[in-house]
Each structure stands twice: as structure tokens, then as C-alpha cells.
Length: 182
Image (cartoon, rainbow, N blue to C red):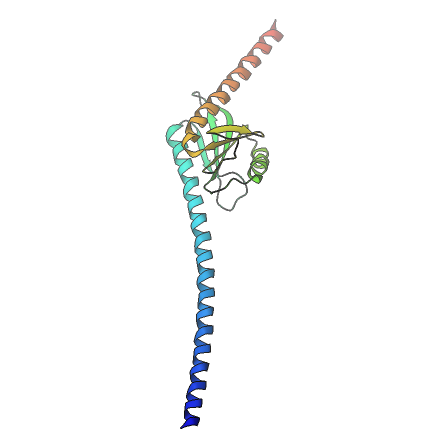
């Protein structure tokens, strides 16, 4: 009888250890799956945010060409080619959207590089988290940084500046041509 009890206890201890190992393995798998789901969720949120800025720009600035930068491609999220009423392109604004809890200092340098590659006159980061020195929107080291609620208002101002700059260029070209003729 004692031997059977020892055998039963040994078997029970072995079964408990096996169960504990199984539980620990499952716990690790759950943690890994949660991390993957969170990462996928963040990516989906980012893609939804990119689509939102594109849709907002398209609905407000119908004369502009608003282009998506494909996911996985280096560069900003959206490219806005500003067109004057006559249809001529007056300049380009690139948009980067961020939906994070904290500001990352390397975003500015990355977007400036993207701006050079795209040949854009203006670069904008629209973000939920802003640097401490930005209240609403502000130019930071050559890149405009704005909160989401003010993104379209900033776009209006930047568009106006690009269109006026283009008008000035065209007028100056006409003036120099007239001077040459004289």
C-alpha cells in the first residue's frame, strides 16, 4: 500500500511539473502573440491615420494632387502638389503623420531627408505628440510641426505662401523679359 502511495505521489508530482511547464509555455506564447497583435494594431492605426490626412487634404484642396506614398516605401506618408487655379503646380508639401504618445527627435531629420529626395518645398509632421516648444504648430529646424486639429489650417497657410511665391516668381520672370526687350 505504501509503495502504491509513493508511486501515486510521484506520478502526481510529475503530472504537476508537466502541467506547470505547459502553462509556462502557453504564457510565453500569449505574451508573444500580444506583442505581435499590438504591433499590428499600431501599424493599422498608422495606416488609418495616413488615409485620414489624405482624405482631408483631398476634400479641402480639390485642385491639388494628393498622392499616397505606398506603405513600405521610404518617404513621407502623403505628397501634396499645390496647384494654382490655372492648374500649374506651385510647389510641393510632404506630410508625415504620427499617432504616438511621445515625440521622437529623429523624425525631423528623417523628414528633411525625405523632403530633399521628393524635391518638396515644405515638410510637415502632423502628430498627436508634440515637442515641448510647440504649441499648436511651429517651424522646427526647417520642418513644420503641428497638432492634428490644426493640420488643415496650417495647410491653408502653407498653400497660400507657395501660390504667392509662385506668382512672384512668374511676375519677376515677366519683368526681366520686359527689361531685356527694352
